[in-house]
Length: 470
Ligand SMILES: NC(=O)c1ccc[n+]([C@@H]2O[C@H](COP(=O)([O-])OP(=O)(O)OC[C@H]3O[C@@H](n4cnc5c(N)ncnc54)[C@H](O)[C@@H]3O)[C@@H](O)[C@H]2O)c1
Image (tube, rainbow, N blue to C red):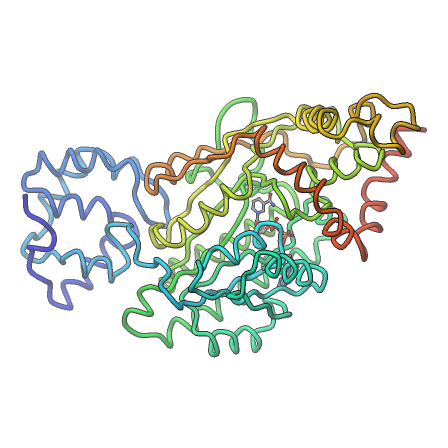
C-alpha cells in the first residue's frame, strides 16, 4: 500500500491549496484517501472514519464510503503532501504534535481552581514547568499550599487577572510557553444568577483577551515552536442547555445556554471557535460534565453537602431533587485534559463525561449513607446531642434555582474513539475518596471557607431554608 511518506512532497502552492481544502473539515478523510491504493480502499477507509477533526465537528459525510471514493477520484495524487507536511499544516493524523517535552513551560490560567490545583503539578511532569495565574488571593494561597504539600517545585504562581493584557503579554514574553491551559473562570451557576457582571468580565472579556494575547504570541513564533503551540479552552456541558429523559450531548449538539453562567461560557466557546476559524489559532475546546473530587471549593454541591452534614446543618436540595447530572471524578477529567492537549486534533472539540448520571436527591442520599458508615452520628458528639440517627434526616427540599436545567448527560464516544480515553473511577469509589479527603483535610476546608464564603452561603441558602421551615 502506498504510504504518505512515499509520496512526493508538494510545491508550496499545492500544499497551500490542499491545506485550504482539507485543513478545516476533511483532514482525516483526505489522509485516508491519500493512503489508499484503490477507490474501494478509500471508501472503506472513509467509512472507518467515524471520527474526524475540524471545528465543525464530526460529519456523517466524511464517514460515508461515497465520500471516500469521490475524494480518491478527485484527488491529484501526484500532488499529495506527505504526512510531515500535513502534520505541519495542522491537519491529518491527530497524533501528538504537542506532547510536552523536557523543560517546556505551560501557562496555567485559573490555577487555584478545583480542577486546576490537581492538574498544574502533574500536567508538566517532573521536568516541565507550569506558570499558574490566578486573581484570587485565597485560591492562590490554596494552590501554593497544595503545590508545597505535593512537593511540586516546578509550578510558579503569579497573581493577576486574565483581562490584564500587559501582564499576560509579559508572561508570554518571559516564559515562551509551549501552550496555554485556560481554566480561569467564574464557575458557579448560583452566583451568576445573583449577578453576572463578573461572569461576563472573566468568561467572555477575559477569554477574548487571552485569545488576542495568544494570537499575538503565536504570530511571533516560527517553525516547530509555532506548529506545536496549543491553546486548550475548558468549558462546560451546560452550554448545550437541558435534556429530557432521553438523549446525550455530543460535539454536534447545538448551543442553548440557559443560565447566565452557561451563556458566558457559550460566548467564550464561540470566541474560541472564531479564532480557530479566522486566525487558525490551534485551540481545542473541552465541554465537560460536573466534576467532583478533592480540592473543590466548598460552595459546589458535593463539598457543600459533606461539610454541612458533618456540622449538623441542613442539606439544601433544590426543588424536588429530580434534576440529573453526569458526574466525573476530577482526576479522570484531568487525564482527559492532558490527553487532549497532547494528542487531540488541533481545532477540535471534545465533550467529556463520567457516564454517571444521578438525580440530585439520590446523590445527596448516597453521601449521607457513606457518612453514616464512616462517620456515624453517635460518634460525633455535637450531632449525637441533636438526637439524630442518620445524616439523611438533615435533608431539606428548598425553593428551586430559577431556570434549573433538568438533565445533563454526555456521549464521550469521540474522545474514546480518537484518543482512547475513558473514565476510570466509578462513582461510588470517587464519592468515597472525596468524602475521605474532606474528612482528612479540615485545615484546607477552614482556609477555603474563610473570607467571603460564609456571606455567600448565607445569601444563597439561608433564606431558602428559613422559608421552607416557616
Ligand atoms: N467544576 C465543574 O464541575 C466544571 C465542569 C465543567 C467545566 N468546568 C470549567 O472548568 C474550569 C475550571 O473550573 P473549576 O471548577 O476549577 O472552577 P473554580 O471556580 O474552582 O476555579 C476557577 C479559578 O479561576 C480563577 N479566576 C476567576 N477569574 C479569574 C480571572 N479573571 N483571572 C485569573 N483567574 C481567575 C478563580 O480565582 C479560581 O481559582 C472553568 O472554566 C469551568 O467553567 C468546571
